Amino acid sequence: MISLKEALKLSKQDLKELKKELNQKAKKTKNLGAYIEQFLDKDLSDSVDGVPIAIKDNISVKGWELTCASKILQGYIAPYDATAIVRLKQNGFAPFGRCNMDEFAMGNATLSSFYGKSLNPTNPNKVAGGSSGGSAAAVGAGIALASLGSDTGGSVRQPAAFCACVGFKPSYGRVSRYGLAAYSSSLDQIGTITRSVEDAAILYDSIAGYDELDSTSAKIDFVKTSDKLNANKKLKIIAIKNYIEKSQTDVKNALLRTLDMLKANGHEVEFKDLLDFRYDIAAYYIIATAEASANLSRYDGLRYGKRADEITSLRDLYIQSRSQGFGDEVKKRILLGSFVLSSGYYDAYYIKAQKARALIKSKYNELLSNCDLIFMPVSPSTAFDINSKKNPLESYLEDIFTISANLAGLAAISIPVAKDKEGLNISAQLISKAYDEQNLLDGALILENIVKEEKK
Image: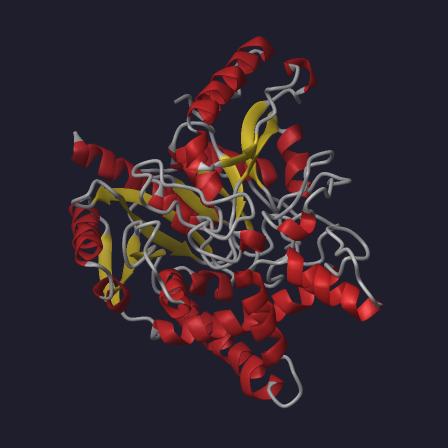
């Protein structure tokens, strides 16, 4: 598969041929459920010039349907481009195909989509991960060069790990959220899913930077990273011992071998513990659902989206539109969020969760003050069976190693490092200080190169 650097050098005619090739491959792999729709059934002359990048169905592209894989938004057409899309187009890229996702980004397996599930390209009996499962499946299957996704608690890194891709979540505020349909506003971040670390840097450089249209955008200087990637530096890495030990045996052994390879290549590795991940889970699901209950209140059947028929009153319109339009997982999280924000429970749950969040961030800052990068698993296991019957708690525990980076607003990336006995991908996760994406991408490139060299 051609790299983004190579693709950016192609002529307009070659790009058209590339799009045709990707579309033909996508049509042959429709069973994966990676794309919601394709655009090459139309005249190619209508497509935007540029290197094709798949787009998750919660990022606004003018003139495209934007549904967040939900029934309630069927028929809604985006009236403007998200800032990330504007910048893509300015840097030689073009949006190309909507990718499937968990409804409103609430999930970790892409099983709750209105359009049906996404399957893992390595083994279709396994999940693609979520909520950016369609994006990861498309890149992993070679039917997209790269994709934009969103990461609220690991929704770029975990599916990328399940589908053997590189999943990169920049620091909170580094990439504009303007035009990203909100799930949890203080946690959401647009990220990239690519086939290599260099591609991740190139795509990140094309969308990052301050945006006055986004009140949460970080007003700090942005310097491009892709032309400064350095695979020769020596790093001090802290590996999170208690997280590695909590992983499935295959994952644990692969990560320990990876750390040995890093040490053999001259990098310093030290083992430390982080807070028990139960604090992360509790804080995350209280904060995320609270913000979701507020953000999703706008879908009321009046302003946009599906409206219930045969209603008897305004109250009935609200109830029926939301009851018919939202799926079970979304309803569950709205209810939980409304509960923790309600009178009598706000202090007991929401305020306490914010205090836990501050504690998690301080622990990260303490560790990162003594090292270059933190090393830990992405997920406790490899991709699990599509038909596995997980209860809500088991499902939520799939995110135990990714959500804390969102709570702390840090940059994080997942990099493939090994395979398990079934041939499923195992990835390592690196985390850096906030706005230290250059160091993070350098570390990821170093790790990627070491793994490639080991395979020779």
